[in-house]
Image (cartoon, rainbow, N blue to C red; front, side, top):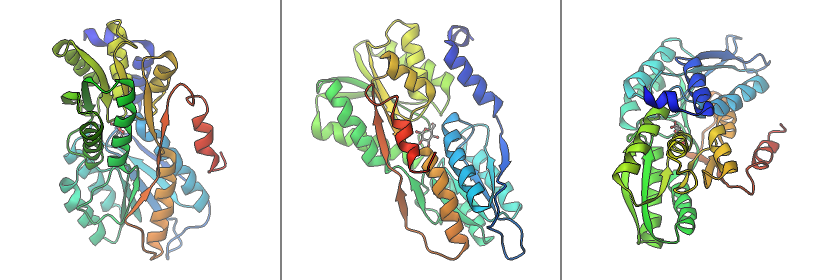
Length: 329
Ligand code: BGC
């Protein structure tokens, strides 16, 4: 494919990393204390939406907390962001009678039956990163997405001088976390900058190559486009690759969620204006702590806000140290 031949090295490396962990199943956790009544270590499994580098720091936090509390941590990811695949992964985990599952939900209704099934089997289920509000999941740990989408739009309005065309790219149209972000984003524009028009909202299914293609198509379809906003992690890396290929890096405003390495590189070079970093490590860490609480009969709050940080040129090189400080890292 032409696109791949022309991709810059960082993007190629990103894609290689994605392929390398495809269908990934990891197992970790050598700590020492949280065993069940039979004396065996508890097993907690993280199930992301699918294979994606966004989840690496989430699992790092999960693994580190598991090691601290003496729990066995596992990671089971479907290859693609597809609801039947995520359901299958969860069903396989249920069949193994694990103690807890932390899910980043690809869909709300689509996961209700399988979360019911896990609950009936006595397995504690929570969601992290992306909630499934209609399900029996005991809590949601992550970003308050509507508010985060709203603050992303508020930041963008300043850069767009209150007017012009913006296109939104989103990795899957079914997940409540992304739809909430879009809702907040749209509401903020309506309230604060009605002269900014959302001219497109495209689904790139959480895929980097599709993001590149969709960006190229957007640039063609909307010659007057002033800005692109990404509600998912692959948007800034994918869109910046496409913009650079066309010599339009820094000329179209690009911003969006998450702090993947290529997004941070884009902020440093000026192709990306800002990103909204979610506190992924914390989501993973708290997932273990809350699953432990649940297995010990403690009740959990309905949701736990992990917070976001807006990253631009001023704090791109310092924010990570600040975020990790609270975990003594
Ligand atoms: C979202 C995740 C999603 C990831 C990759 C992040 O912004 O929080 O739910 O899986 O982007 O698309």
